[in-house]
Image 1 (cartoon, rainbow, N blue to C red):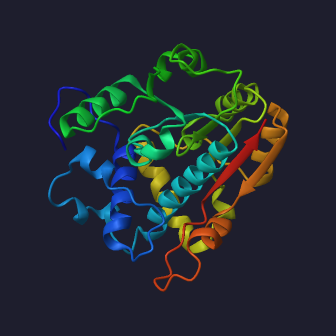
Image 2 (cartoon, helix red, strand yellow; image 1 turned 60 degrees about the horizontal axis):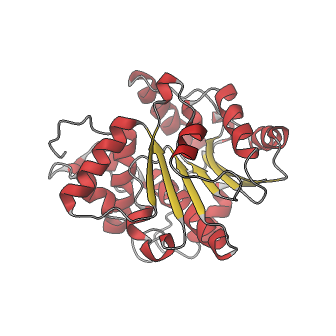
Length: 285
């Protein structure tokens, strides 16, 4: 890991960045997502690919889930941009590299990365060290969630226009929040301009996950609890759809792992496919 006085990102953000790079390095083409910029940011030790959580075969479905959800959301952003939407918000942006990789698309988009101040400061420092310029339309929005700062208020201060439609994405966050906190986010986004779209990943209850995957997800939940970041919320699809309708969204859809498999992994000789434990909510105002 790069040596810096600024607190480094948490292990989850680092793992996601490394999985995205590992997909390019160990999985056969065509790649669902091509992203090795996060690997440059993290600059892990030489033996990073020997880490247990990087095991090419054992972690294949987790890795596939990460690249599938990222590709789906980037496709969604691109489609909405063609329809005239010009704002893209990443809630809990972590080490996402959309703004660095999709420069052609960001010329017509204002991209807002919402993240904890320390993580964001670390990322900005690493971008500078690597000589990766910050695009003009990328806005960093530091929000201290632990101090109950309002991400929406900070977003508006950073130049976001709540009267214009936007795409808002939140991946790998919902399970760490209480159901009440998730509902509060749904209500906030549902109050944005008509034509706004919210894409959120969520974890299914263990009993809805394929049996061969349950032990792995239960282990991940135990590890998260031991690290002080326990999984707090699991949603059956019908529940998250009902909550989104209650929050005020006009149209709600559930995108399952099976649908992502059909869309991005069909016909692969290596059998790579996402795990069954994560799905997406896509809700439009």
